[in-house]
Image (tube, rainbow, N blue to C red):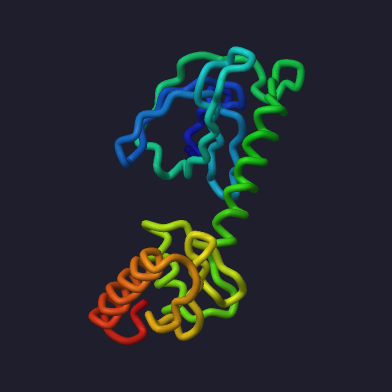
Length: 181
């Protein structure tokens, strides 16, 4: 890319078809080129308003060959840009909700072993943390040190199920060896 003398052909707005050294074939419009980092910013997808597009950052060293297709308009022209703000806000809210759900699954002030036991229980049963206590099905509680004897509350069948999962998971963790949770 550097020193190729392509000058005008590789200006912002040009549409290229290129192949990378990894075998990927990309067709898109040049949005920007950063000479110090040697990174090319390419917009893939339709230029129609509202159409979904991808932006790729590609190290120019990885371009094996390219074909100049045409000169298009300025991809950064604000009069032609379409941003679906409602869609972006919905994606942001969904991502935040998912991050909160995932954060609630991580115990605070618990050992790696406790987190492993929680994760094992969560595969088959609804669980949540109540400080350092694992709450299963909103009724069964497993307290430190998370042994079958520390299971309280709930129906006898629910207790037996939780105890069985704890015993199995503890055996599996011990088989892995100490410190390999």
